[in-house]
Length: 212
Image 1: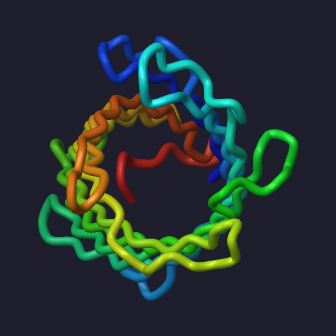
Image 2 (image 1 turned 180 degrees about the vertical axis):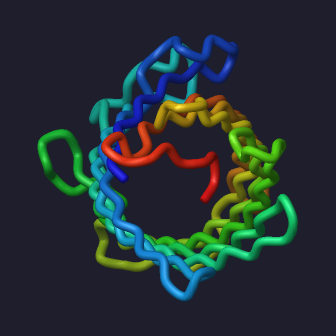
């Protein structure tokens, strides 16, 4: 799967979801399914994220943007029962950061582990509509510019709900969803995400279902 993602965001004091640029992403992932229920993936990703001050008027920080090169592997189990599918997933990431001119920021690189549980429910017999519920917990350790590693600790949780629709006789899947990102442990705060995904699935082959 190849995809490009673009994100916009509001200031902390309003709900203007497209007020300013947040991130853009280029990602390439390869997936291999074996033994019917087991699945593994490897991927490489490039991300460019805008950095803003935390106080009013929330202008760009001096470095303006942070570049990230990410490599990750994922291992999942697909358990089906009736119209439902339960998918526990383990994902391990290596994240390397750079400033816009490719110098090293204060956080040099990060090793991050992600544990996700998804429940996917087909809404019709044709399996062209589905609802996906997910809960994901993230843990990580970072290498700082001082040469020291931080402790490997819990960092955040992500809870999402998505509705997906597969167009009849067209290899296109449209998904609309919401994610609540609960960041931190001692004094957690919420970040809210709305997203729209369009997947052009196997354009030179047969039309697939919402979830295979």
